[in-house]
Structures are given as C-alpha cells and as structure tokens.
Image (tube, rainbow, N blue to C red; front, side):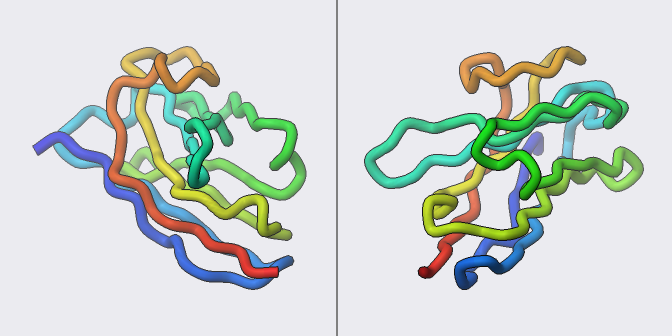
Length: 124
C-alpha cells in the first residue's frame, strides 16, 4: 500500500517545539522531492517547506524561516520538520507530500501523494 503517514503533532505552548515525522511506505522515497504544507481552519492549504531528494536543497516560506528545519533520512524513508519558537499562528493541520520529480517546488498542486495530516495546536 502506497502511503505517507505523519506523526508528532500535538498541543504546545507559545515558544515551544515539536518535531513532525513523515514516513513513506510502498513507494520509492529517496529519489523524489518532498514537502510540508499546512492548513488552518477556513484557510487554503499553504506551503511550509520542501527538500530535494539528496537533502542539499531546501526551501521555506518566509514566516517559518529561522524557526523550522526540514530534513530527511532516506535510509529510514522518513522526512522531518523540526519546529521551534512556535506561535499561535502556526496552528494548523500539517501535511507531508511527495512530488514525482527531483525538483523542489512550493505549489501544492505540483505534489502527487499526500498524507492524512497531523494537528499542531499552539496555545498563547
């Protein structure tokens, strides 16, 4: 079964940290770009971060630069999102996604496979 499964979400206080994981199964993980997106209630899904298949190229949306770090371990078929200095505006469902391409992009329409999402809630 081809799937992406997110984990690591939860409730955290303002300024706290969480690490999200995205584990792939039933697919070739190592050769494709991966990304994290989020969707808050009443808002569209937005880009958070993306990483190339080697991990050498990363991109972030401006609002998380310096606070979030994306990484991957191809041997474990797992991608991570380390989130520090969390703010209430980071509250959302976070999704991981895979592109059928090595090129890192930011548009959700350019990603082909999605996980079910994990809730992140930051209290003020």
